Length: 276
Image 1: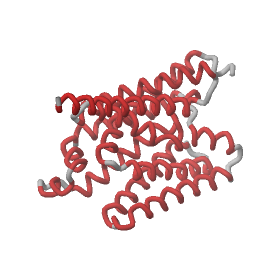
Image 2 (image 1 turned 90 degrees about the horizontal axis):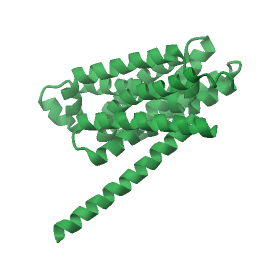
Image 3 (image 1 turned 90 degrees about the vertical axis):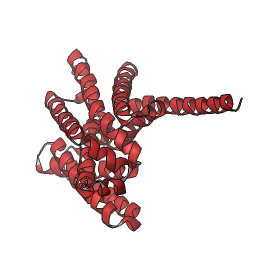
Image 4 (image 1 turned 120 degrees about the horizontal axis):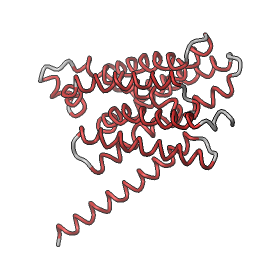
């Protein structure tokens, strides 16, 4: 606990949450609009295989996570494009195999128990300066590519057939899009862990969708909401001496339920007003 009493520790944790929220607010908006949460879940849970292999061979876990996420994204993307009839089953297989490989590698690595818990549920209070720089670099990659190919990603998110008619190479941009989702997943692993990563990737964007109509505004609002939820969750977990990942998700989930209820009430109120 002496280590955690250092104020710089909390500052690093808050900064990690803010940085992760940016890239995930951007890509989470695409995931919500395109309704590919299950595919993103397959990518997220495949990451454990890369992290376990990296730990076993003595490499940085984040590097293994990044490699596994990109491989899973390409594999799942090709599955979706070529075998749509069996898409759910095949993605589930990739999901399960990735998790199983990771657990086996971690089981063969000395001192695996604490590492496994931190990777599954996150440990943002132990984020290092190197991890912060890596998170910033991944953020810049995500934002740079989304800015450069915004129109192409927008087209494939809403109507792939229309995008093909406009001459957009849909396969290339779809696979690139999934790779960016994979990068966003890696950003969140150290914040809330693999088990809860999809919630923080999608719920802020889903809340934003209740209140704005354009994709650009949705990205901005989702990023700001993610920053708010991670900061609030870290503060509450520190005050109550609780694991930060689950607290962040509880804050996010509560906000989503309140937003969904409020949006439904507002729609009903407007419908009743229109009838009158």
